[in-house]
Image (cartoon, rainbow, N blue to C red; front, top):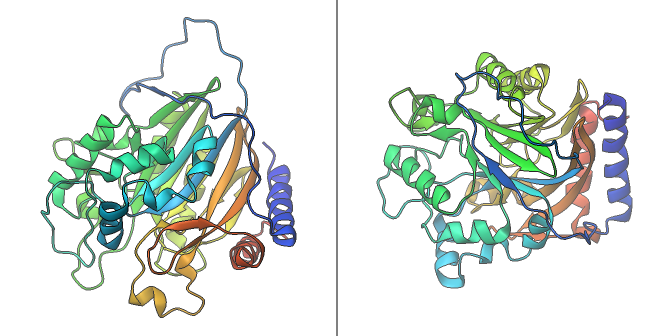
Length: 376
């Protein structure tokens, strides 16, 4: 994939959507199956050559969203309306894609075992039924809420996803598992997903997210450094055709990505990643083309309870969201589209928007992407 071609796609996709503002384009083809492939740990060597006849590689449609938080008032909605409710207006888009990705920013646990930190969330196990129905094929677990209910909450989350056959990356019962990619075999293309977090300590309680990093003997997340990301991508490249990296990093509510976000994203691409998907700032940040790869620094909130800090910000930017629809082949990203989404301010659940309702999302993405050099 050439950087010039991707840059043209970025500009054309945003300008066409902004001028037309007519919502996401429907897909007529039925979704294809996604196969989870067992993968070696980060310490093992390259996978052996296949012994079967190679499958012809076709293109793969992927949709990516930001933070999915199913606790708090949203957990109450799920109890009242059912686990499908948070995704009822967007599920069709997720289900039609070959692969749907999101950041699961909440532990899934049956009981409360909260730790002392600024914000603590918990989702009921029934909420996983909604993730399955909505069409999520792979989730990132490396984030600053993975340990809201300690190691027990993280292990419960992992158990719930395993039971639902939803692959995940970025956390595990030990460091080897936390660093292991989730590999999907789709349309003859092997896609490796890695997930990492690097966020500041909590402002009030001082809770250290880095302190939740997995060790060889304890559960935790994958912590992002230039070195760990580089090593992870290089290893994943020996196991897959395409590597996609999820990065939970940045400063909350800030429009531009910070230096850590950019250093980590660049490291991922330099090591061979075709796509970087970011989240944590709770607002949309821009897209950047770097060395032929596409970087989405923050996809914002997708399902999230909004609070007083959100409502205090003019224009309620944390309610502006998007589904990033991407087409991949063996060369990397060949096309993409920004599908505008808006969260209901009271419920925190997403809806597709078009026309004038879509304009704030599209204008924001065009402006912030232009600042990163993806358009004139």
